[in-house]
Structure formats: C-alpha cells, structure tokens
Amino acid sequence: QVQLVQSGAEVKKPGASVKVSCKASGYTFSTYAITWVRQAPGQGLEWMGWISTYDGNTKYAQKLQGRVTMTTDTSTSTAYMELRSLRSDDTAVYYCARRDYHDYWGQGTLVTVSS
Amino acid sequence: IVLTQSPGTLSLSPGERATLPCRASQSVSSSYLAWYQQKPGQAPRLLMYGASSRATGIPDRFSGSGSGTDFTLTISRLEPEDFAVYYCQQYDSSPPLYTFGQGTKVEIK
Picture 1 (cartoon, rainbow over the protein chains, first blue to last red):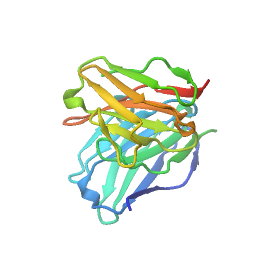
Picture 2 (picture 1 turned 90 degrees about the vertical axis):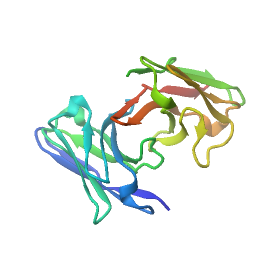
Picture 3 (picture 1 turned 45 degrees about the vertical axis):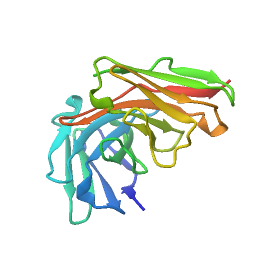
C-alpha cells in the first residue's frame, strides 16, 4: 500500500535550519511529484512548493523563495524539504503529499521554532 | 489565484445537507479543483478531484460540482464523522500552481 512516512518532530532556535524527510513506498517514486504543505497552529493549509520526482524541477511559494530547498533521492524514494533562517512563525506541522491532487499524505512533522 | 471559502463556519445537525462554496478569483483551468477534509490532529484527506470526481473510498454522500470560478462541495446527509474542516484547492502542474482556500469548518449545531 502507498505510504509516505516523515521524519520526527524537531525543535529549532531562530536562525537555524531544519530538514524534513518523506520516504515513499508502495508505488514507483518517480511517477508522481511531491508537494510540501505546512499548517501553523490553528491555521489553514499553506502550499510551500513542488518537486518533480522525475527530473528534480522545483517550484516554490514566493514567500519562501530563498529560504526553502526541496530535493529528492530516487535511490531511496525519499523527498526532503530544508527550510533555513527559521523564525517563530515557521512553527507548524509540515506535510508531504503525493501528486497534483494530493491523494496520499505523510503523517506530518511538527517543527517548533523557539529560543 | 485566490480561493475564497465562505462562510468560515457552518453549524448543522446530523442528517442535514451541507453546501460548501469555493470561489476563485480567476477561472480554474480544466476544473483542476480538489476538496480535502481534515479532522483535528490528522493529515488532510482527499475527497474530490477534477471538481467532481470522488477519490477512492469516499462515500457517495459527498459530491462536487462547478467550473470556472464557482465550485461547491455537497454532503447530502451529514454523518457524525463528517464534522470537520474542509478545504478547496486549485492545482495545476503546468506550471506548478497550487492554492488552498482558507477552509470551512462544519460543526455540530
């Protein structure tokens, strides 16, 4: 069965970086793009960006340009999202999701940014 | 594209019909419009894609309609497990362009 399994919760200080992983199984990884979505406490869903698992092309949300990098490792069917220069308002649950309309989601990774 | 979901909260009773609108600021190409359900502490769950196609395993009391700038998610008869937050999303991979609405919470009246 299709699964996206994310890495565990992180606590970071302002200015630090975080890298969240998303390991896919149960399907051919390069078939579908991976999208990253985050949700601040009590807030709605925010699209962060998209990566093609076929050729590595990326598209990032404008507000995160310059701070976010999305990559994939096709040998391990794993996608990564790195966010740099963390601020308190980056505190959120970060999700990976499969394909254009997100039929499968990871379980979420809580990233807390606090001094 | 900005997606507007209004009202922010719908207060309904089990068995009632729920109608959730989603309005886009520009026409959504090829009806690339999806709906998700999210319950507290859980990841979102895909309900509908292509505006009106039900995702795998979604009960037929859920239906989607619309095109252009106006879309609707309808729940024909609310079951206790349907009380949740619902998001619409525009998606397009050429070029990648994804936007979520701010969500509508369906709460028990």
